[in-house]
Amino acid sequence: MRFANVSGRACLVLDGRAVDIAEASSGALSSDPMMTADLANHPGLQALAAAMDPADWPELRQADLGPPVPRPGKIIAMALNYRGHAEEAGLAIPSEPHVMAKFPTCICGPYDDVPIGALDMVDYEVELVVAIGRRCKGVAGKEAWQYISGLTCGNDVSDRNEQFRPPVRQFSLAKSYDAFGPIGPTMITPDEVADPNDLALSCRVDGELRQQARTSDFIFDVHYLMAWLSRYVTLEVGDLIFTGTPGGVGDSMDPPTYLRDGQVMEVQVEGIGTMRNRIVAGSGAGTGAGEG
Image (cartoon, rainbow, N blue to C red; front, side):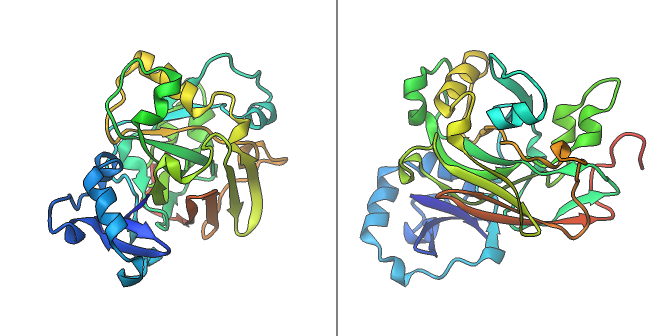
């Protein structure tokens, strides 16, 4: 199944059309997009979807789409989880996952503007994002998919100045400014794709291809990440895992190339869809150290 946040309401999507889940179920199912994590395997929703004709549903409009998981509890992000990204950074392939956090207020929609204020070292990172659908702790890798409600597309927008400046590298802070976490445009259940560990993903800036890879280039696949993370923390319904970005980030170009006012990031994950977010300079972003 495929879900979307349409004007703040949970909708089921099929063939470019969307139906309001609460309205279609006469109020039996919730309208809150956060509830799609619980609803993904709900037998009532599956029966409802099977009985409906998508031709009767209204067309899905991009302008109405918000983040499919608008209020995540935790956002866990992975660094250096693609071989190509580790190699371009001149770093050894890690022997275990490198974990950081993004704060939940960074989340924005798939077509929202991303304000950067006066920042001049902002970068893009296309990522596959996993949404947790069941509370879990100490899950075995082979059981991981039982706890995943959906997959979506993410862009781990990052302020490289804040991320790398001395005396302390602020990875989490640099990735958590408002709107530095676009996700969407829809969320799919894992059974919608043949193998979530082998999906194409890409990022373009103003139409220029910057990143292109497959999730088969993961150093640690989704099963492993779920098992490893749940050894340390309890994963709860609505948590998100940004699974890492492939090579091709602007910071590793020669010379380094960062995002500028008016540029459009186009981020795509196979089977999920494409996000388009415009960079907007001026007010409204985290100011970074020594500014503001």
